[in-house]
Image 1 (cartoon, helix red, strand yellow):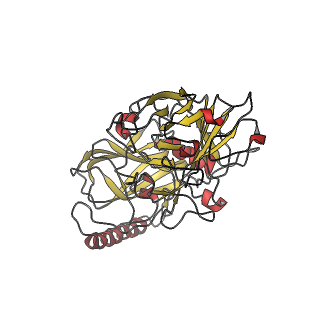
Image 2: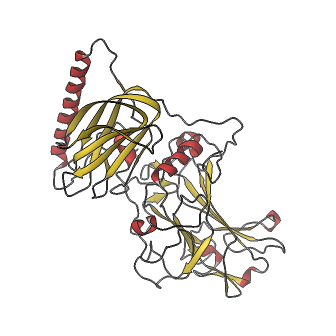
Image 3: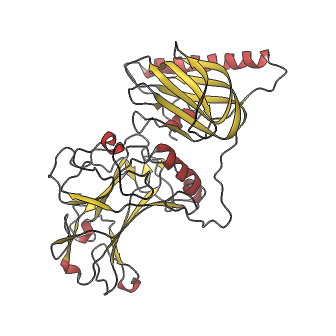
Length: 436
């Protein structure tokens, strides 16, 4: 998680906010001291939530993820979309008895909210209700139990969403949540999604948004609604072709033509990997923020040495070799395309002007300081039912060296977080269901 100093928000100077934050911290310390002294015969409750997996209904942008509310850093925050009914929940790792919740609000606070607990993250019990919240730093004495604790904001106090510098849950129980390694697990940091072809359009909602027909032809996989006007909101309410079905992300590439006839891949696997960085960096990999857009490859490449990362080979025919351009695959085999997406994020932007600058590839096994947040490496593997003379083939964007891929992340936050925690971080090979 990136440590940032608070910036201007809603017209308030960062320096003034820093003073207020110090005051809030002192207020929280005073409250904690009073609590302990008044219950001297009992052990002080333990902070259970810090560093655990947090998810939320929405995020305002890529720089305000749910995890920022449980990282112990008063310079980072979670913020939601501008709507009532937003929630933030934390998985304590095991059932806990909850005795106190501390809410350190940013300017955008909730006037009405509930604190809820759950054994399974689905059925919730309300253990505290506030109708006239005042924001600032609120310490709430509660009584409940559960593995999951949730803040449900029922009424915003401002025109914005709701935002927390920290969401702290105190009590007894819970568990540290180091990833577990099942007996016999294959030690490869991986999970995957199989996302068959859905449709073909001359559209590109990342590079040429709201310009239908302005792009070269693309073949789309996963989300079945993708077009030039697609947004996170429109993709979220659509279905898709992926296994697992919870992945409704959109993936697309330039269409392949053989003898000027469009050919779609019959094998479409999207691997989420930890490779490419050191093991200690793999342990720090975080889920993609919802709505992240990534482009890999060089659609404007003019040759095999023109800054391209496209790789072509033949299925079950290693003797044919590999190249940045099309290769001659023997009869009975298939043409394969491999494309690796960058796996280091700047921690701030869901996209950038050139659709690449917010992401970077690792250097010497770690993410560079400019892009310090490691995320899974997305590897796109497509198998086309063609072989033979490569002069017969072309992409809608040009030669084989122009192969590129686009990814628009629409994974549910909790599902993606679980897979990263259970498969990527402990270096365990998982299937499409996210289990070894």
